[in-house]
Image (cartoon, rainbow, N blue to C red; front, side, top):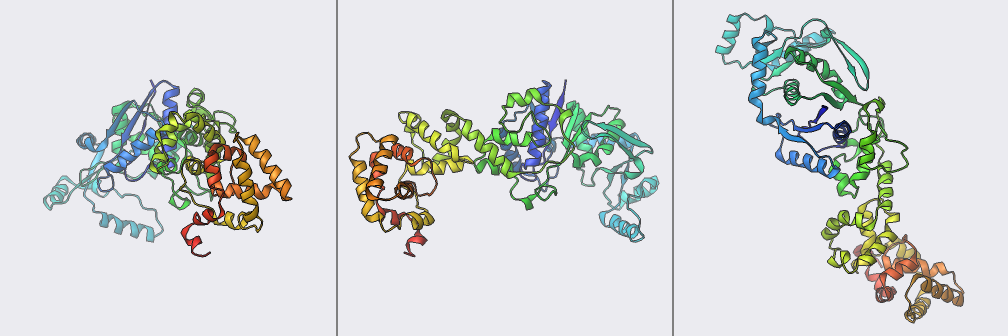
Length: 484
C-alpha cells in the first residue's frame, strides 16, 4: 500500500510551496487509496513553536487536506534518534566527532584560501581511543558523524529521471549534534522507516539530500522509498518564491477572501493539470486524474492574477447556499450579518448574492459590495462624488425623479427603468446623468450591477431616502468632508 507523508517544520507559517507539496502527497495517497501521514519536524527547539504547529494544521484543514495518521511530533522521539545513531556508531558506520564549530571554520577558510573546496577532513575519524578519552575527560562534547563509504549512489527520481552522485562529493555528515539533538538526515530516515513510507514527494531543493539519506537507509539494512522531487515555485522574476514576492502564507490568502477550492485548483495546476485550465475542477476529479508521471520538470510561476481569476470564476459558479457558509463568519466580524438572511430573507439574499458575485474577485470584495444593501453605514467614493454628483442640473432634476419613483406601486427594475428614462427625456438630459448619480448616492461607488436591479433590491424606502445630495455630502470620508 502507498504510504506518503507531509513533514513541515513549525519554524514559520505554512507557505504556498509547502502547501503544494502537501497537496500532491495527499492527491497521490487518495488516488492510490493509500495513507497520508502528517509529521511535524520540530527538533529545532529554538525556532519551533506550538503556535506555528497549530497554524500549519489550520492551513491544511482549510485547504481540505485530511490526514490518516498523525500528527507525529519529532520532539517526542529524540531518544529513538539517539538510539539509532548509537547503533550506527557501534556498527562502525559512524564515528564520534569532537571538532568545535570555530575549529572547523578555521580549517574551512584555510582550504578555501588556497582555492580548494571544503569537505569535512575526517580528523576525528583518525583519533585513537586514548585521544578520544582525553577529549571526553576535558569535557569536550561529541557529535556523531556518518562514515560515507566509497562508491556512487544513483536513484531514479519519478519526475527528474536517473540521478547519480559520486560519494567523493558527500562529506561525512552529522547525525547527532553535540547537544544530543538529531539532524534532519537522521530523523527523517528513522521516521520514514518507522512509518513505512513508500514514496517521498518533496521539493527539488531536497535532491542533494537524497543520496545521503539513501546511504542511511542502506546502513540500516532497509530499502529506500521511491523519490519524486517537485520543481520549485518561482516568483514573477523567475527566482525562488520568497517573502520578497509578497505574502506567501497560505492563511493570508484565506483572510483575503480566497476560497479553498480555488487555492486547491491553483496549487494543483502548478506543474500538473487534470485537463484544460479554463475551468474549476472538483477535488474528486483531481483525485481520479492525478499522476506523478504527468508532473512537469519545469518550475511553475506564481501568478497571483491566475489565482484571483480562478477565485472569481468559482464565486460566479457557486450557488448562494454554497457561498453562505464562507461569507457568514466574515460578515459577522464586520457587523453585517443578521439571522434573517438565512431564514425569512433568504430569497432576497440569494438574489442579492447573484447580482453582486459576478464582479467579485474574492469574498471580501463580495462582502463589501453587499454592505450598502445591509446597512446605512457606508461611505461615498470622493472621486464618484466629484464626477457624478456635482452636475449643476442635479439639485433641480433629482427631486423630480425622486417624486416620480415615489409614485410607483410596483418598485421593480422594469418599472424603475421606464420612469427614469421618461424623466430624462422630459428634462432633455441623458439617462446616464441619473444612472451614475443614483449609483453613487445609493451604493457609494461608481461601478455596480445594473442600477435598476440595485434599486429594486434596496427597496423603495431605502432607495428614496438615499436620493439626497446633502445627505451624500455627509457620507464622504472625514478627510474629504473637511476639505469641502
